[in-house]
Amino acid sequence: MSMPSTWLITGASRGIGLELTKQLLASPDAVVFATCRSPQSATPLLALGDSVSTNGTLHVVRMDVTDEISIVSAKDEVAGILQGRGLDYLVNNAGVAPQDDRTTTLNINDLLSTFLANVAGPALVMKTFIPLIEQGNRQVIANVSSALASIGTDFGREHTSYSISKYGLNMLTYKLAKERPDLTPFLVDPGWVKTDMGGSNAVLEAHESVAGIIQVVKNVTTKDAGQFIDYTGQKVPW
Image (cartoon, rainbow, N blue to C red):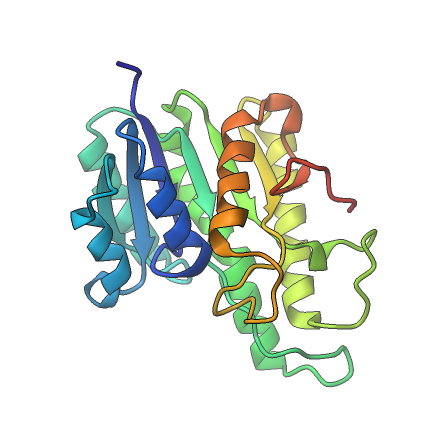
């Protein structure tokens, strides 16, 4: 039997995070720490623990990525369960997307709250969980970004606050890759996915995007640190 792989997924109560948890748990070798703000109301996530398709081990952990005390508490809980083992994979998936805005019409409170969730949140999660990642066999940190954050892709004026926040996440990931060459932090673009955030007009079903994301995350090496890679394995221009 192969050694179980350990995963921590933020924002696991719905959308891409929920689908990631579901697909990972199909393997008996997966130990998944699925985090969300309100586990007691995360009915679809809790149901995975009793699903006939679940072969791995699920731990649902309360964590609000905008609250440093909550993040530290979650780390302590995860460390207690791991009992000296490390985290192989951290997927920073939690995030928010305000309504479509423009540079000349954006609301400063929306911009600040988006930065808090999409940049400060992942920064605090990485900082707090690095001691557990250091003990893992893979030491991979996958930060879920968006092609909307790519100047090279040239998506234009849409979704200004969200795009700026994800570009901040890209730079944060680059900085960690330069500071910690022993780890493998990178960015993954899930594509335009049919979720509450992506909307019904999106072109990808969640299961399609997530199947690709999992393969990308499992296959990255230290050479991919700081890179921006989409769910098909292709590099995204910055």
